[in-house]
Length: 227
Image (cartoon, rainbow, N blue to C red; front, side, top):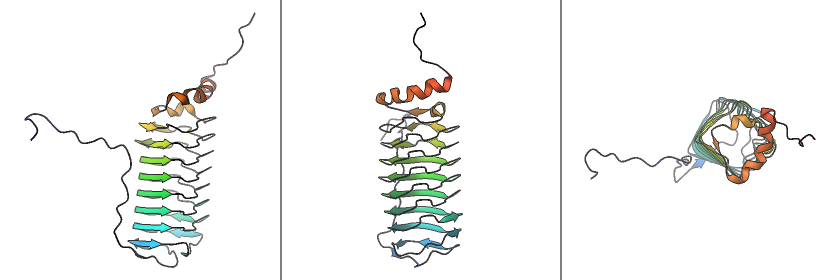
């Protein structure tokens, strides 16, 4: 028993919570239909996805090898969902609500998460070059070993997030808000909007790559001393 007057502090949450999936999953429908609820299902590569899908809800489910490339989802809600080896390149998921969602070895090149709410989301070993996170709000988002080259994070609102071992070269963070967000191990060459990295945490080896952008942002010129 703890001494009187003392309090036990709970461990500080540092990483997203994993999806809570049942031991057994039913087979998903053969075709994605708008307005449906997928509950405790497993979808495969054979599932057909139309170009436009409205108000799809997926919960406690897994999708392996799905082809969602170029599809536009409006009103998408995912809770406790795993996407594995899925192709979402060019997919539009604007204003989606994703809670405890994992993307593993997925193609997210050019995917759009603009205005989305990402809570306890993990993206691992994927490709997300030129992906859009404009005005998205993220809490406990972990992106690791993933290429975000040229990604658009304009007004990206992140708290307790981490972009670890990622290629962030030429990514735009203009007007972003990064609170307690880690960038360790990531390539940060030619990052745009470096002043918006206020509140982020970096490692010593990332100081020099960011220095040029910081000097440009504040208008400091590096020249030879005049005679």
